Amino acid sequence: MTEVRARSWEVTTSFPRASRSIKAAALWAALIVAASLVVSAGAGHLSPLSKTDPALAGMAASHPKSTLSVIVWETNPASYDAERTVRALGGQVSHELPIIRGFSARLAGEQLSALAASPDVLKVWGDGRVHMSSDMGQFDSWAPNTVWQKSIRLPQAQTYFNGAGVTVALLDTGVSQVADLGNRVLARVDFTPDHDGYDRYGHGTHMAGIIAGDGALSAGGWSGAAPRANLVSVKVAGADGSTDVSVVIAGMQWILTHKSDYGIRVLNLSFGTDSKQSYLIDPLDYAVERVWASGIFVVVAAGNRGPDAGTINKPGDDPFVLTVGGADLKNTIDRGDDSVASFSSRGPTQDGFAKPSIVAPGVTIVSNRAVGTTIDQLHPDARVGDSYFKGTGTSQAAAVVSGVAALMFQANPALTPDVAKATLLGTTFKNFSSQSGAGQGLIDAYGAASAAAFNTFLTKPANVGLMPSTGLGSLEASRGSYHVHADLPDDGLGAKDLDGSLDLVTGEIDALGNSWTGNSWTGNSWASLVFEGNSWSGNSWSGNSWSGTCWVGNSWSGNAWTGDSWSGNSWSGSSWSGNAWS
Image (cartoon, rainbow, N blue to C red):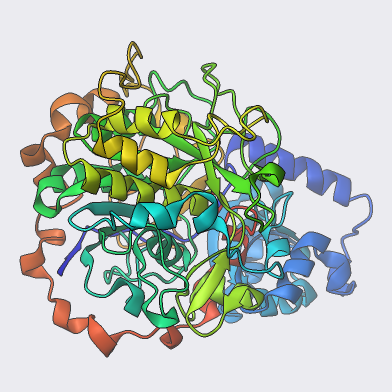
C-alpha cells in the first residue's frame, strides 16, 4: 500500500454564505434590530435560555460535545470582554462583525449556556444552518436492507465477476482499516490536516464497503458489489465532513495523474453543491469531464435534496457523467412496490438535462462501520453488530453502481466510459422508470455485466453530440451556498489570523489561498508534469517524505479521538455531510 499526502489546510466547517459577507451582515443587522425590541440593554441579566437562539440551544442540548458556530451580539463591542469570555470557555473567535456590534465564534455546545449567561453578551444566534429540512436519522431504526443484492441480480453477476483487477477511486472522507477490505486499499491520499488517510467522519469507509467489501466479518453476509476490486482512497474531508470545491478538484487532478499507477477505471464521487452555474463553464463540471475523457468512468450521487424538481447536486448536473438517484425497495424482492426514495434529488438541471441517469438501492444499506467516527457517534441506532452500519442516501446508491461498474470493467477491460454508461442505461429494470427522478430505471447488475462482456452497446455509446465544459466559469459560483473556513497561508497573517481565527474560503481563491482563474488551470494545467510541480503536491505529499510506519496498523484507533473534534452544525443528517456530501 502507498501512503501519500497533499499540502494541507485546516478545514473546519461548511455552511451557507458566511455572515461576514455584506448580505449576511445586513441580515444579521436586521435580526438584531428586531431583537432589540424585546432584548434591552440589560439583557445580560436575562436567563441564558432567553438570550439564545432556540434552534442553537436545541443543538447544544442534543450534542453537547459538538462544536457550534455562533454569532455573538455584545453589550460593549469596544471592550472585547465577550471575545475574552469565548476564549476562556475554550472557544475561538472567527471574525469581528462591527456592522452588527458583534463577532462570529466557535465553541463547544456544552459551553453555550455559560456564554449566554455572561453580562457581556446580549444575544447568541447560530451561524449558518444547524439542521436541514429532512432528517435521515429517521432511517436509523429501520430494518437493514437484506434484499438489495437480489433485487438488482447481483448474485448472478458475481457468479462470473467479482471486480478482481479493477481499481475504484473513492474521493471521500478517507477509509479506515477494516477486515472486509483486506489489503485491497492500494493507496491512501490525504488532502486534509489529518495526514493519515483514515476516515474520521464515517462516510468514506461506508462507501468503500458497499463498493468492495468482502463481508469477512459477517461470513459474507454484508459484502459489497465487487468484493475483489481494489480501492484508492483520496481523502478530501476530515472529521466534520466539510470540504471545498477546490479541494475536490485537486483530488480529481491527483486521480487523473495517477490512474495508470493503480489501474483506476472508476471514480465514485459523492460530493455535491447546490450551485446553479451552467455546466458549460463550471470548474467542477469541467474537472469530472476531464477525468471522464481520460478513460475513467465517473459515478456521481444525485443528492439528497428531493423530492422537489431542480435539486440535482453539482457535478451530478453534468450530462457526461452517470448520476445516480436512490431507490426505496421497501425491503422486498418484489419490484412492483419499488419507488424513488423521497429524499432523492430530481432534475431537470439548470441546463435542461433530465437527471438522475438511473437509480440504485439507497435505503438502509449495510456496510462497514468506522468505529468512533462522527457519524458512528451521532447515530448509534444505525449500528449493525460491532462491525457494520446502516446508511441511507444517494451516496449509498452511487457506491452500489460504482461496484457494479467494477464488475463490468472486469468483464470487458476495453470498455470506454461512454460505452459503459450506455450499457448501464440500456439494461435497467423499467418497473418504475415513469416516476419522477427514476431516470432510466433501476440498475440490473447481471444485465449490465453480461452486456459489457458481449459488447452489446459498443456501437451505441452515450454522450454523442454533447457540448463539453470549458471550465472558465467562477469557482465561487461552483460552491453554491456551501463554504468552509481554512488557514489561508497567503493572507499575510502567518499560520492563522492574528486573532486565532481561520479564513472563509470565498471568491476566486482555492483552499490554499491561491488566486483562481479559469485559464490558469484548464488545458495544460491538467498535464501530469505541471500538476506534480504545483503547490497542491510536490514534496508535501510525496511518498518519500512521508513514512507510513508512523500511522499504519495499530498506531491509530478510531476510539482515540472524541466528539470535541468535529462541528455539529457542519454535519447534516439529511445529507450525511457538512451540507456537501450526498
